Image 1 (cartoon, rainbow, N blue to C red):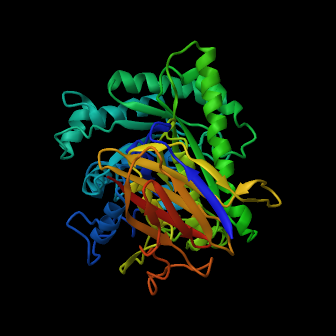
Image 2 (cartoon, rainbow, N blue to C red):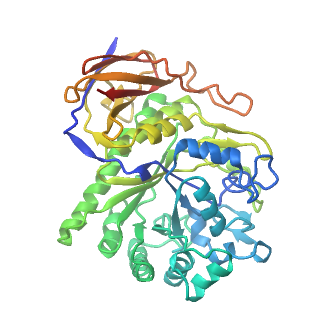
Image 3 (spheres, one colour):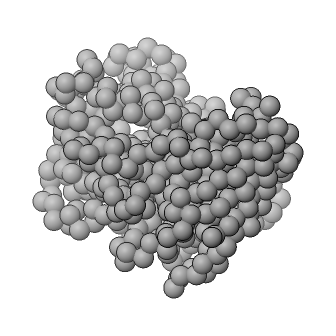
Length: 501
């Protein structure tokens, strides 16, 4: 029998959980937009062409902010092509993903969609083929009330009130040689600084995200971060992180341990930010935006076979299985464990493209396995993250050692009078006997114990079997005073919700 214990105290806090930790991402890539969130003629489409079946699923996830329009796409993006009368918009060769972009759906349509989804917009500007001038102009178009060329152009396009987009990304993955307009850290740092200045001169109320490294494995990491922040530290509020994981080698124990690498990634970026803070004698703390993260590898082979220059081909359409959902749960816990510094994050992406929601063009929409841990964290993971003191048996893999079978954290929602424990049992063969000590909370009672489990790690949801992997609330946790005991099924995601009496 494998055992583990978690002790939490309401006074030992990590930090407040910013609701934007549960953000997501829509890029003009594959069927994320066309056939995903937007499909005129679909039986569920509203008068704007938005799929309302997809909208309802997005609202289930309670996504507070969505990054747009990229991603690699943004480094070749002419924002002017995406506004104004649709019949006058230009078709473009989209070089990042080698497709045709019709621009039928653009910036204003995305703002309209976001309002229906109860989400804010995180807008990215093109610092690849464009630069400072285009960056200031789109902020003027979006946010200035009236009386200037671009604000009046927005009004002419049918939007009297400013969009009031608050959060802006200064480009995307500019350290990557694959990026259109790839730059060195010095080159990017300079243009990001100048763009930040004029964007804030245009609207002083906005907040900005500078590009960090594209992944933990980049050869310039973390020197890139230090150089970029040397230029931009006083002018931006966030630094971005991106990371994807896969299990191409079918090594599940290592795959489920990857969130430990994510912990180290976050902590290295935090340390780099704090080094620049000390170097500049600054009182300002740099926060982090983990604005791309997910599992991504299933679709790699099929994507290589796609013919170029199609309109909205089925790109990056990973079909997620049960073990993917477990790692997504572990990654969510990693971000919660750093809630004091990771204030925004974007699951990449939202619909069809490495996404929790899948659709058939012209047909049904369904929830992938990863939908569930993301939804549970978003809905129940609001409040204050608590320091988890964990005692757990551990295992070693060929690549990662001292991996605890238990991955877990607790979130205290004082307003609701609730504590939620999120826990993953990484053990692939045995249940995990868990004790949770809530000694500082007084009497507690169990609201529910939600479990996502499957006897088949490779089980997936499809249009034909949309509920093959789905959670249940028959977890069987028990509460006695301030002590919680539960048997966590092998290879399971668990949400134990407790009411403080």
